Length: 247
Image 1 (spheres, one colour):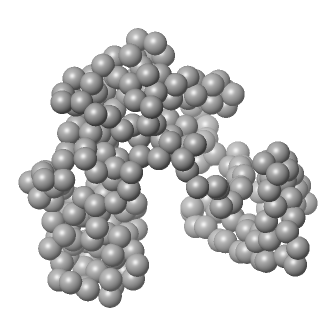
Image 2 (cartoon, rainbow, N blue to C red):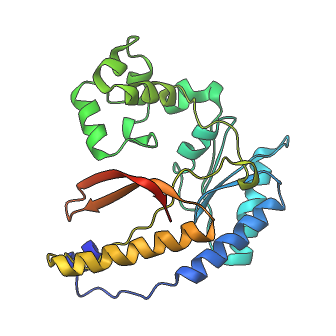
Image 3 (spheres, one colour):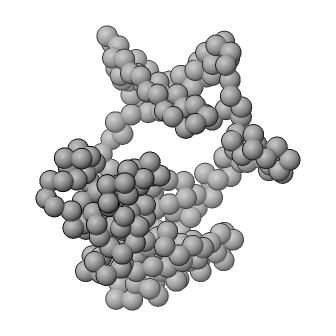
């Protein structure tokens, strides 16, 4: 929003309502649980659903129609026997899209697509891959053994698995998930701030938010991390381990 306002201050900016969004999100996830008990929220507007049915497309259409009729929102679905592929193909046809992509179809349907279609491949990674000759997903999948790992380290191994449609594991409802490893809070400023006292005040506010959440969860931690992102979206991260766990 801050970047949009800088580039186009004459635009009309509508007020947001985080509480309304969270409330609606919870209601939609409850609706999804009517179709299957195995629902894994991935973000405020995204979830994985594990289903057992012969007609996946018909079920997908029923889910879309239910969400649109009850909430006035469109939903794009990706359907697969791989959690990762479901994530990837959910973006193939928006809005109201429903795309089926099974692991057996990866070579025919996924390999001809550009590398940036893979989840986790941003603009910089895509540009680097293309400069090295990896233009399509198939180029990644057919890369000689060890080449991607040699050029990209652990990311190379991940890219190889994703190009073959592998990854994601099973759908894990919240009650089956492992305990969270971290608690965090972040805030995007409306405009660039250069005054140190203002930045320290914001840092104090964020620390209080994190502390409140930690105490509510009856948790404490020893590693404290600060992340700062500038107007060019360059991220600087620093961490420090404190002698005793804090909340």
